[in-house]
Figure (cartoon, rainbow, N blue to C red):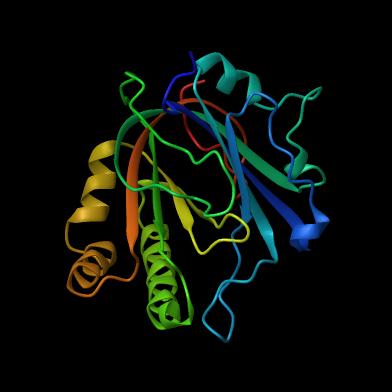
Length: 240
């Protein structure tokens, strides 16, 4: 009988010399992934919305079994198709430690990921995935969507100045207003301090509580089990 939830993830980031449109990349995911999402980290344009064209793309694999997640980590003989031709790429195998909220990284593609704790514990560097999305998205949602995207960029700039934040990227799966952020931290304490104490992220949480930017959110803490590659020219720490 197939397990009911996904306990393991892989994250794959790729940076290209020039911006790539969706049709210029192979979106095929790992054979062992029970669910797969791929999307750009596009810049916001003059209209306040993210571009589907970007020099940075990300993929998320979701797995019922730890061995399947391990098998999805790229090697020279089995690379991730999406990162072919990239100047730089980074890959991580992760275990769900805690998860809360409503995750839907695509309103169009099944199966939808459903995260459940793996039983792994966090030691040292950790990863966090947050997601946000809309129900019955239409033009009436555009003003708060634009405000949300502007706030996300302010949070990313804030995190970039913190020594405990090691990585911060966005993955917007194609053909949906739902998206997620991926961040890596030196330890859990520094993540909690940055997210929930005084600062840009805490201010945005307070604004969302007063007048929601989105209809659903989720927050997932992830243990880093294995990493490969570099990001921004550095090895992002993790248990290898």
